[in-house]
Length: 381
Image 1 (cartoon, rainbow, N blue to C red):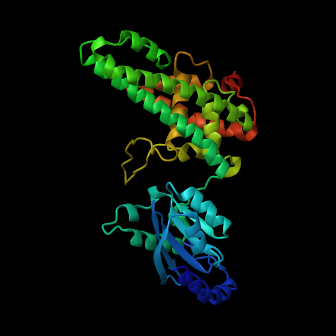
Image 2 (image 1 turned 30 degrees about the horizontal axis):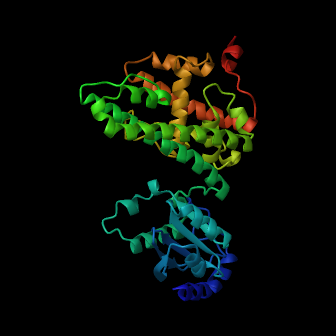
Image 3 (image 1 turned 180 degrees about the horizontal axis):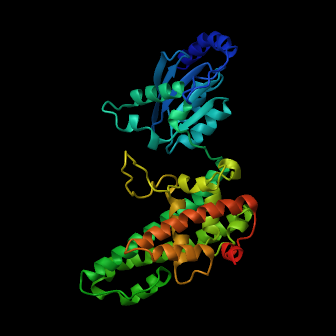
């Protein structure tokens, strides 16, 4: 199969050189393959094996096959070949594959799966068809793939610490809820306590008949609590390696965890968004739109983007609006929204404050200014 790709690249080289002298036509974004690209490849990545489809510059299928999802196999298939445009879906293996193929001097498009409903909702879905569809979309125009930005290797490693901490937190929460539920089912009740002291109080209050079953879980909660504290210390150390997060942490309610996660999820690139307002849309904190004619229904937020960062921003917003939040323009604005409705008004206010908060965090990241909590009120006065 590697010989087929090499033969395809050689056949299309002449056509590419001729096309390089022709001016590109400006249209509605569905641009053709740029000159000096000798082939277009669609790569459907699997955990063990990946399927690929190679198109020439006219869109004809010239090679199809499968390759093992390993570094060595991809190097044999793509190293030393002519420059190609390669499209693949975002997934578990897409970060290291995109970095490898980019290092081999190919253009890599990592497609957003949320935008590729043609693949997810196909009635004849299989790896070969998915690879062919990715290749055709990349041939017609990269805008149809809604390509995402690939993170660097170091950024991905640093972000793994935060994601591992989140897994430990969610596991601890599930165990605590399970222990409380099993105790309640016997007619008893564990005392209310924060998670940090749950293991000590639950061990003393656990019914004797349930101790053989629940004591191991309670010990596991204490172990996870210690591990989460170690993760927190590691995050603080990571924050020192990203000094630009200090300006973000001047917001009361935003700590090192949220600040570092914000910088890493945005790939440590301040110029990625032209406007700070776009960050709220990127994280899925804007309402959905399904307007039709005179109908403009009110819908929930899109929940696009990274769910971990959206959750951290929402927790910071809850703290700002909570009893321990300091007086600020953002807090007053959120409380005024919460007072204008019934039961769901508080939830909507939290989401609105979270959206404003990420916009503010991005602005402080760019300007490196210290946060002035009463800025709007002082200007009005």
